[in-house]
Amino acid sequence: MNLPRIAVDAMGGDVGVRVMVEGAALARRRHDRFKFLLVGDEPQIRAALENHPNLKAASEVLHAPDTISGEDKPSQALRRAKTTSMGMAVDAVKRGEAGAAVSAGNTGALMAISKLALRTLPGIDRPALAALLPTLGDNDLIMLDLGANTECDARNLVQFAIMGAAYSRIVTGLESPRVKLLNIGTEDNKGTDDLKLAATELKAAADKLAMSFEGFTEADKICRGDVDVAVTDGFSGNIALKAVEGTARFVADLLRRSFASSLRSKIGFLISRPATELLKHHLDPNNHNGAVFLGLNGVVVKSHGSANAVGVANAVAVAARLLEEDLTQRIHADLARVGADGLLRSARNGSKKREGNPE
Image 1 (cartoon, rainbow, N blue to C red):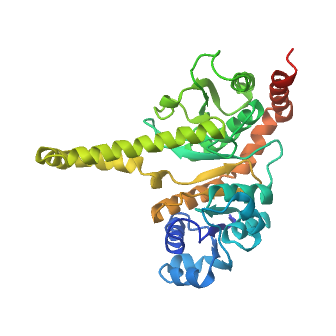
Image 2: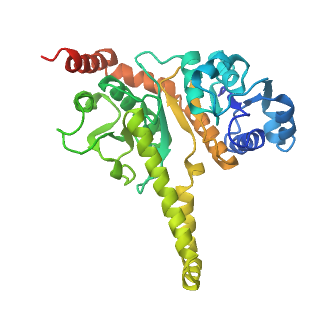
């Protein structure tokens, strides 16, 4: 099988070329059928490649004279996209020179560049940012949208559910992932009109989709292990994600402080170290790195800016997995299965009626 190569924005992230190249080299060991296009400052990339002969043999370097900083606004990034490492990596996907792009750079800039260059799939209005979160269950949770769209109507939420379920089937191996809408309660009468309408539409299409739609979930339950795909708008999703990440850091810092408080606590730490190391591994964002812009005509993966080499490798591995399993085609098939135009049109019309012309 001749797999498309992966374009890596080597200049993205807080550390830059060294970590991005090292991460790509780690990912290459896991997915040795893939080749890479490393985009950025050519002298720096080639110097870093000298330490990774396996990656060097499978890579081409594309020089980019410019980079996008974390402070650049999306509009500024769009104007400079053609000369930046991020823009050129995404453009390689557009031109068919790569099947996926991976960047640890500015999220807003990456979203804007990717949407303009790749456009959305037929039947999808807006791309959504989806990521993996750890749970108490047997597999990770897919959550979307995490910030790409601050305001979403029922049609968008239905689309996100379909895309999130397709993504979940790939990364978790579940045939029928459990899908829930994030809400302020689990009762059918709770939430906004758009949430209620999206739930109605998903229930009606449940027998045609490879998912199990189970209504609503609350934010305090998303990591309990009883949901595989949590769907929400980007505003609520980003707040929920930051709250989960902040709580994880709080717990880790609290444990560290408690274990250092006395000699008895230090002894207790030594006794419980295997358990605390397991907790640390589970909560480490590098082990769940790699958010995906779902709904584009191509695969784009966002790595944490602060990710280490292991984190970057996981983000690249996500891109490789999605190419191997043909995520785009799976979303196409699911949309066709439910007759998405009619289903999603009714969701949008319902939203408009309530906004301006109530019956």
